[in-house]
Image (cartoon, rainbow, N blue to C red; front, side, top):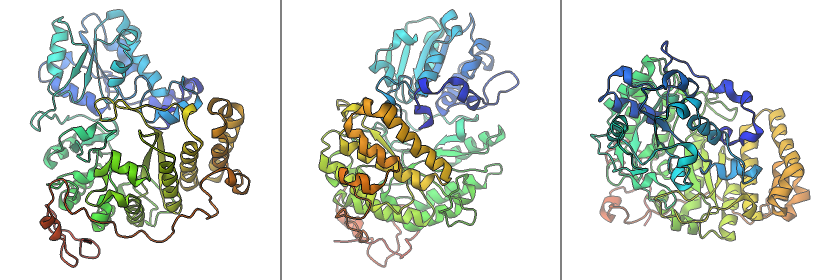
Length: 551
């Protein structure tokens, strides 16, 4: 994500072009493709003969696009440069900086073959909304944008393009039913297979939470796994908005341990699967069932390519799910994402996070944790609490990815204000750069590389950063650059010498929510101390043999 967000103006294409190279079939078609394009391909092949449907890399468009080409489907992740990550990782170099992934997208839309033969261009994917939001249809030559899951509309749109009929400029798709979901049988990028859709935790800044929760049956998923392996894939990446909702019954926030362990065991057992990374997750389930984390670790650590000296595994491997923490402020969490704490009380958000990270680290899960700076209604006290949380986690094994809030279409915060880097306060910069510093010190274990990052920030600040971001950027940047805390701590809120008035006592057990999202007091009360954790579709128990319940 960081790599793709580097401003294209500072990264000449020849420096990274070789990293975009992918294997091709003898006929020139793509061996690997983004999952969404594989879904589109599978749908079109139900209506057209194989010789009329081609999936190829952008570099090969001139080989396949010609006078007979009626439509081109493009998968767009960040076509304009308006994604969450761009708010920091590209715009730190200036608000007009265009990231690599936006630059590469533009190369597709403006490809000479497309300009010459003028087929209809239909765009889908997670970033398709950006084209509508910025009204970039004419500039990019886009005829139709599909917002949402496309299974129910793909065939009709391409058939209309084939017949020369007019296309709607924007299509907002109906949510597909489980029967309409297509599981492609060809190799996808990173071996992605879609294990769930939707979420249910109702975060105000997120779009997947608006979708119905669906768990793809394991037999269908295993077919997709074997298809990837048949075509040479060694990595299988089951993706989800939250892996812990897979197979979960009501209430969804109680993980179905049997379904999860059985699924990952089955994938790991497929001959040819060498690597099995983790997708997105939430933190609360680690407290709900620590034994589940332990069981999954026994499966996943031997299938991980990630290594760090801090791992206690004999091979020094670890797994790294992406977990959205977003804020250290319980007040702000209650306003924007109360469902993330379930089945615990969001007022205990910091304790949930700290204890959850402790459990994950004990099992060699070193998560990538996202934070959002500049959420609507955020106050300076909220940022201070996020900094306090960083301090509480300073000895944990975590990689932080702070982003600046970006209002996404169709969410409850769609009308929110997206801050420009120049608008960030000193406290917000302190949070971002302190999080980066802690990530650097943990994850970049080579001393020379670590030093290079710090010197790079030092040079950037004096050459460009102080002019772009103003005086509020100075001391946070110097902290990242490794300047002595004795020289800068008086200018910052968080003191790394321990004088923070932040408690170092162990987190207390978070309070259970008595009634939430369909769970009654009677249902929760079945989980008394000393009783097996044996409801909601799971028979596994926690390490203590019980789910801790507090009145």
